[in-house]
Structure formats: C-alpha cells, structure tokens
Length: 249
Ligand code: PEP
Image 1 (cartoon, helix red, strand yellow):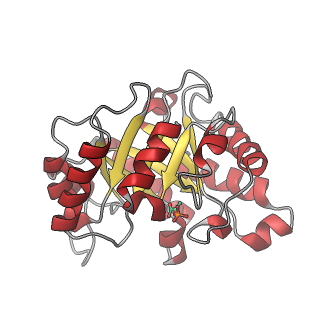
Image 2 (image 1 turned 135 degrees about the horizontal axis):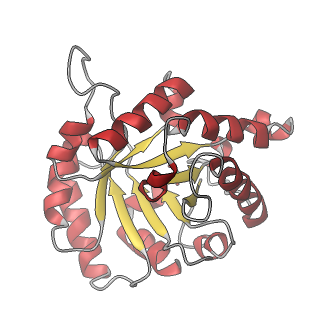
C-alpha cells in the first residue's frame, strides 16, 4: 500500500435501528478503544440511524456517511433525502452509485449529478463502480468500469481529489461470499485509478475494494498496491469482524 491512508468503510445497507446503531458504536468503541493511527474509519448507516450514530461516535476517530443523497437540495421528491439533510445530522459523507441503487434505476447521469451535488454541499463521496458477472466473463470489465468512472467524475475538479474515494465493487462479489481474488481486485482497482486520473489526481485518490470482504480475506486484499481500503457490507454489521478488518489495514 502507498502513503495514502487506508479507509475502511462500513455500509450497513437497510440494517440497524437507531438503538441498534448506538449499541454497535458502544461495542466497537469498547473493542477498538484506540484504533490504529494510519487507518481512517467510516460508517454508513441508514438515514434513520445517522443522528444516533453521529452522536455515539463523538470524540471517536471515525466519520459517518449516508448511503445516497438526492440531486436536489429540497422539493417534491417523496422518499428522498438531500445532502443538506444528511449534513444536518452531523454526517460528513455519502456513498453514491452503489450497485444496489443502480439496480433500482440510478443511471450514470444521476450518479454524476449526485456526485457534483454532494461535493457542492460539502459532503465527501465514496463512489461505487463495478461490473456484472456476464460483463466480466465477456471481457468487458475494464471498459465498463472506465465508463462508469468517466461519467461519474465528469464534473469533478482535480482539486477535489481528496474528497472522493472510489470503491471498486464487482457485483458478483457483493453479498455472495465470492470475493474477487487479490489479483483480480488489484488489476481492476489499477484500471479504476487510471480511469480516474483523467479527472482527479490518481496518486491521491483512494481506490477501495468491496465485495464479501471479511476478517479472513482483508489483509491480503489490502496488501495490494492499488487497494487503499475496503467498503464492507455484511461483515461491517459484526463489531468483531469490522474491527479485525480495520486492524488488518
Ligand atoms: C457492499 O454492499 O458495499 C458490499 C461490499 O457488501 P458485502 O461486503 O456484503 O459484499
């Protein structure tokens, strides 16, 4: 790994109520009272638990993000949440373009607009990209992730390189227990970095790997040259496993 400080981010998806989120934070702080110095930790709970998790982590070196935002600041968008609303909870970042949201209809253009909106509002961004199994088998992975990166970063300035992390998450590895091999993860994370370099500083931007990362496979994945951290779904709900992944970084 380079001098880029690794980021271990937990995506809780549609799990944990505010009370359960508080209990997770209490458990995590007890398990990892003094986190390793050169690791950044982030937690992305559902909207309803943001405030509870932010207040539970006051004074602890971890930041909180949402799992998406809408592209407008306010208005007639039933069920949506704006960047301003997320910021008002004390959260400082957001995941954008997760494959589960793309599956529900989020297009490259919507992701690009949301990336710009998040940065303009003052949130940092974890942008997700990744290919389906059919695309990998058809040899289309590189072209696909390059296109996703180019679209999402089209309106981002080089000066914003430190405010964006990109998570390479092969869709076939998310929630399946089928992790990409360290070689595959490294190879595609390098492609993601190269694609991002047309828009941001490739030496600065962090590229994370996501897809069935757990306490057993984290160390090997995180030792790859172009993998600067992990976006962790299922294993992030388990305090012990998430703490072990942080320690592996
Ligand atoms: C994710 O949803 O971002 C993810 C990587 O999930 P999991 O770790 O469960 O595969």
